[in-house]
Length: 136
Ligand code: MN
Image 1 (spheres, rainbow, N blue to C red):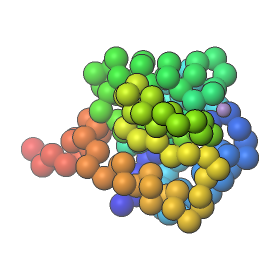
Image 2: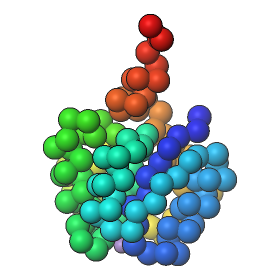
Image 3: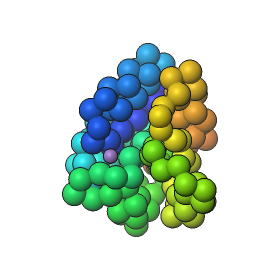
């Protein structure tokens, strides 16, 4: 299932790797390099899923998530944190903040795309609902 996925990441090497892996899996990608740009693109493009770094310029990943979840048109888009945070409890903190999932860096090339896809399946975003409705 091909999806349109927004990647919000300020590290060029991580961006390149995630982009390569997701495009190789057949997905269409949108890129943002800081939190505010990520929100702007999310609002304009309504992607099927958002992958979001935590430490970002202009607005961090928690700020991006909060703004997404405040917006009725964007709140149902799955938002997956991808971050190097490694301390015990970070997963709970991320999920408690409202992220739909969490993938840790360094990215595992073997499993990254499948991990993201597991969050996109069952997506209830407005775009998915619209696509699933019969034409009338
Ligand atoms: Mn970062």
